[in-house]
Length: 169
Image (cartoon, rainbow, N blue to C red):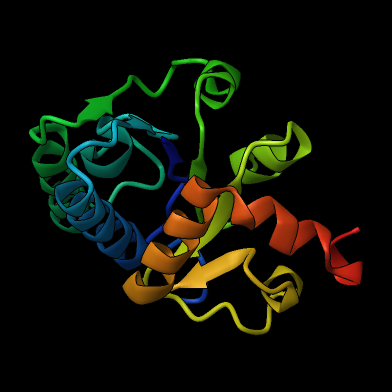
């Protein structure tokens, strides 16, 4: 399973907040703990310095250090491969059976265009007003929907669900 985050900012009105990052990482770790026979390849958008380095334009060291710790926790799981932020996302997509992406980052669209089951996942931030959220099954909101979408992707039902909708075509 290829997993992608996005570029997060510490601005409350954004979909991709630091709080969203923390919830996403915690939920991903929980999913990996449930699915011990599944390999998760996590490809971060940015390196740890992005969150904590005082010279980084978007860093908030105190909150950023929580994200770094959550990443470290995730990387300790035996079924998680933690890739460098510079790793080629197309390669991750190409070798994945399923793709999960946080905050409408492009790898889910790339995977779907390649016929690979995928979904966007919002762990915390309400995205109900976002147009893509109106396509049934495309966006999972909260851990229960993440598990549902994940299992639908694994079973092969995700693409059928998406491609059957006029709004997706």
